[in-house]
Image (cartoon, rainbow, N blue to C red; front, side, top):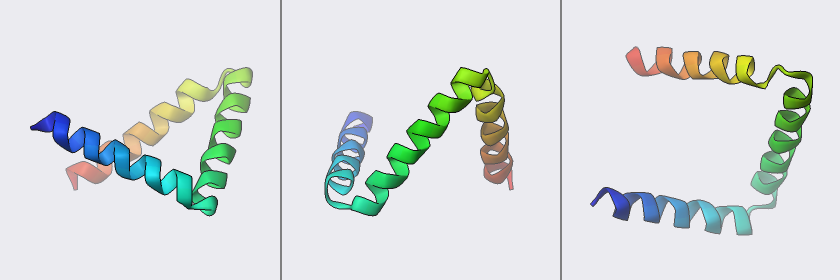
Length: 60
């Protein structure tokens, strides 16, 4: 059952990425920024901060 939801979600994301140019540009820009942060050694710290923000929002 969970696999069904995951498969449908991935399918919707793939279709949206294929059709929405603005979203595609955002994903590419995000990948570039992540690559730059990784080169500077700051990627894990940044991911930890964003994970903390998401965790805080879920608790509220």
